[in-house]
Length: 335
Ligand SMILES: [Zn+2]
Image 1 (tube, rainbow, N blue to C red):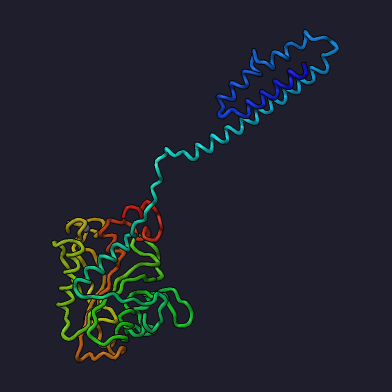
Image 2: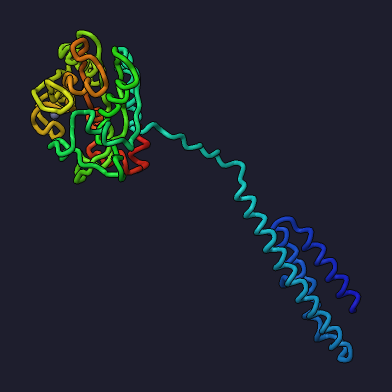
């Protein structure tokens, strides 16, 4: 009898081991432990056994019962774990599309501005964002205590270093390095101590333009900016110049493009005026030529600035300058 039990136990354990999925394992369980299973029959038959055999045989049957029950449970867990792994490695799933980045709207507008001025013979110049006071102010005819410094409040880095408030210092660096004629644009990041609102942020982006040669006049400035405006926003755009003041240009103008959002009817973007103010421009002040050793009797030049953030806002219909800096993927993935 004991031999019968041990043989049955061995067979049960072998079959449990050979079950390759939970359905096969369930068949093994029913075969031995089910209502009419072989082990169940043995347990039931204990009552018919001779009383002197009962304790030893009963012990052995109970042991076989526990052993087979444990083996079933262990195998069940192993098969479930394996099934879970197979699920994770499901090769029928479609592949994951790698996420490809898009260009930032400011990168797009900068590339377009560089390309358009490139058509007119401008090359790109660069300068440091941590700038010396001399290049950011002094050499641009903005001495200490000049009222223009009020509108250029910035981050002071100690010593004579400041975070540049405009891209105009690149003009000085270019003219120090190269004799005329020069024709450059200088796109880049600039900083000011501003109270943030929809159109002001502590960091923004400008593009400086400088053209110095013999005989350069306001007519060139107006013609070049008009060409630029129409290449960027379309042939119908008009350009408006109004007198203004900047320490480093004389005469100075502010310039606007007719509103491309509402076609000059007046909208929220142009504040009902029909005009989008772009920035300032003018003829380079002879005093600035004095700082870089250019002969102001022989050469004249124009300079202009433009806010790249503003151009991108007008071009792409972006409502707040802060969206450029916030790294919101919903915004950045629209490019
Ligand atoms: Zn408008």
